[in-house]
Image 1 (cartoon, rainbow, N blue to C red):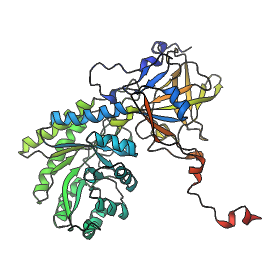
Image 2: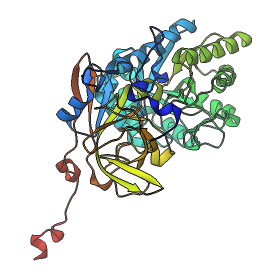
Image 3: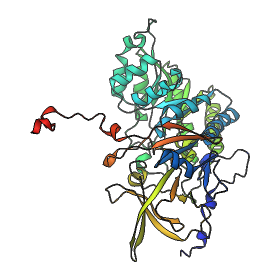
Image 4: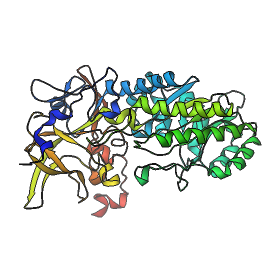
Length: 473
């Protein structure tokens, strides 16, 4: 029996107990609709998670529509509350890009940030207006650039190679449209040189980053663009990182960007938009204490307003690109537990039917999560175990030193906060099929991603005739 006082509770301790009418989803471990039902099971979106696994199998991503919509509205409404100028919230869809998610955020009035032709195509398939789509990336292919230009998206230019490539594509701006050729709409990504406390791999605002133009070259960049009639520079972009709990770096970013904004006017550039990126973190463990969505938005808005007022500048259109803080806390992953192993005096392993192929963040970023046993929510926590995945990899550990009740094969384990970068980074390692995903709302579960099959795994394989069974005989 674990003797730590904090472990006298059970899975109930993780259930949301919002203190206000508008709780900030990023500050909760479970979706806002999570509750305990009469069978002592975890319920999300009015659906019993144990029943969902029985119906759809496991591993299973369970996405709560209400939590996602609440986060979208809080961002949009906070910008309306704190920023007197025009604003737009766009979803950083690399967190989780699929047609259903794109359609939900678009229905809440958000645009979408995409970083590949595939993400762009998915957003268009979901019915998004191309004018609300922004294409990012530090090495966009020519095909991706042409695709985005043809659709009428805004391209966030990352480097000189891309800028020079675009300057030679003026004839493509009216490609196959029958319309008069129009300038290519671009924004410039600049590296602000602002440090923040986060994982090195997701810190993007420092000068030593693969993303964005060096700000010391900004006048050279502005001069080049001013001489390109085929390019229309409508805005500036910067992003300092991800999973950030500090507010001061975002305040500092606003002041830096307004300086760039002011300088653009000296070159006659029609810069009217400032995109301050995203980066607000979420709660993965009890010790995490991220600011609320409202606090983050208030900080960035006041920073831009103060900087513009001090320079006597008109307010630009202000854009933000939240990803993780919109969707991370809206999803949980349900697993079925399997084998167990006791290493005397060292640790106890319990296993699940997924792992690094459906959640690569622990092995990639050493990310930490919390888990509960969904079919026995009130069971008293009694042991510390290491939750291992099923892959042939020693590092396939979902949670090290997890605090759980006594478990047994067949229990349903739920890992919280898996909406961001879980499905989007999922793989077929060991040829495991990627999981299904369901959207839950008011007691109804809708399949939004089908579970892959063995046939899906070999669908793109090609076997040369000389290697076929008949060819070897």
